[in-house]
Image 1: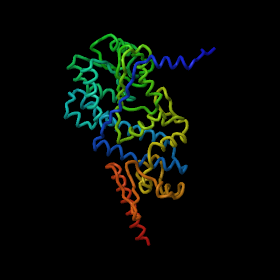
Image 2: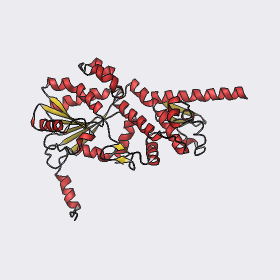
Image 3: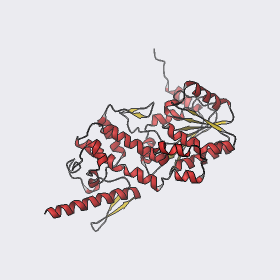
Image 4: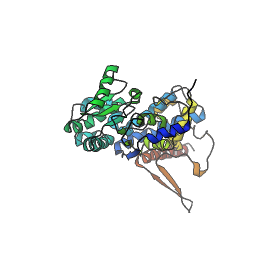
Length: 366
């Protein structure tokens, strides 16, 4: 028999929790980060255009998820995106300003500043979350000297650690005053109860789902916690993360129909729901760019051809397909003014050049 649930009791539980402050920390992308991030907009939009036309090739869903995962990694930094080649080079180096600058991963410097303030200056313990263990490795490397100078250390609690190692990590973070930071992933974080020892949570990137985010924070903000809680979200506003943050602010999961909310992983059982959800997040690129016969996209999506032109038909000017980062203003004299962010400008110029080339070929044929 199910226990009797009384809403008033639930409200009383919430009232017993200490205050919680959510702090969104904007992180700028480097020019190199932005370029690599925006290069992926065209193949993503190609696949979305094909999904609307019903001409998706096998494997397109996985290809699209892989592209989005790349964008999330690039929001963390080029060092994370290229972890396999970067990590062997830097893991034994001190995280000097020069080395960190070469990684094009501004979040690592922001994290250092947070650890200095929260852990060193305020004497608190922190829970640092990422979906990716590789990002946690970079994060631990970036703050290792900060902690060592303060005679502190960090431990890991992820799916990569065995049961005995995870138990030692929990014992250390709870009982050892010198252990001040716990690096955790969603895979390893299930079942963590740290309300008696940790008062700050730092998210290196946002999950797809508000439920997963609340589960993370709930490791420290639950009954038994006596101190106020601070939650720091590191958000690369110019990239995909800025849009994810907007969805989470509205308490909306991007992949509500195809998301495993306990692991922040997208299931592939419903390709239609998947493409529909991603369409809410990524604006389609201009028609000419979507018609590109780029070899990498063609290998997964097939020949794009003039799919965009054969889609839902012509649209009013106000609803014309656009690339994220491009603003079109209609002027009183009938003209338009186009403003584009650096990464979007490159894609737009490529599209215009392709259109110009088509026009010249058509003129020669005429």
